[in-house]
Image (cartoon, rainbow, N blue to C red):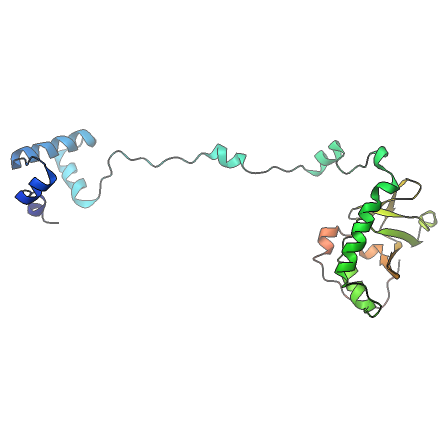
Length: 223
């Protein structure tokens, strides 16, 4: 921008409109130099002229600093496995180990699995139902151990209350909590007349992981 244009006097019509008192050139120049001297660091006249000629100067501004403490406080810190075991989060208290307490959960599971399998009609394909059951959540299902390499597990029936990666926890009608390993066991699940068998060795995953897994059809499955 031309220096002469910057220092030109304000026109008379703008003076009346803005209601300002015009200054002479000498007074305006003295004010500008005094303002720059008080607002900038003490530099030589040559450095001041160079700074004003080649870059913009922002007076009295500093960028606000981010509050790191507030940002870190917003992050939710979960419990690790050791802390969960110490707090006994996954343990069912003895007074809660009652079969009748989990019957409403079983009724909810029956409604859930019926909707998942499109009503479980007599014309439904067994392969279709099997594919749905592979990714279903079995909390609340009544399961029975029909085969196992450990004979003492065979015949145990109850409501599945907890499923972990390697075991099922069920409540029997005798109000006993049983821990059944998935490996080397076969479980039967009855739903509205349909009986499906679960091969525990192929279910050694958490329910959340199994829902996203792609299963391959195999001809035979052994214990």
